[in-house]
Length: 199
Image (cartoon, rainbow, N blue to C red; front, side):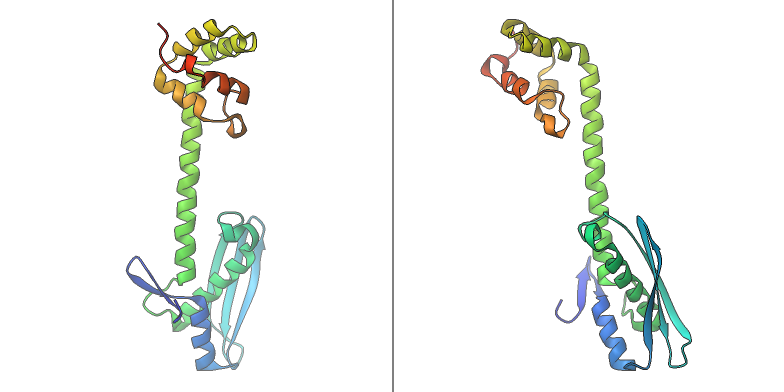
């Protein structure tokens, strides 16, 4: 990456920094890059323009970033968005290389796709967990009551009325992550008396 080019999925992309350097080497300070903040809300939108010596706009580019959508956008969505807008304006000006998108944009897009996929996976997990709780809610409340009253034999029978696969899923999620059982209840249910199916 020292030459300002990055290979992603077999394609070579220029970084915005390389595009800016090429622009300055070719045009010095005669041509200018200006940015304009269009929106600074949850959705950050920036516009960048390239102006010639007369002040005419000869190229432009827009970019948007969602605050908090990636690690960099947690703290620097505005700066990240401005970099992307400048990269797109320079690409429109003819400094794209073989790919219009910059390396910065492509890597950000890949990170965002992975973040969305991870969030969906977590969401799917909680939907499944909540359905499992609903399926066994009556037994779960009786079980909680028997554990609270320290009626161990009844607790074992109730716990084993739930299929083993369901038990493993229900006990896996700690209360700090939204699990139905308290830390104390989970400790009881993990005891060896609860491990096998009731006779």
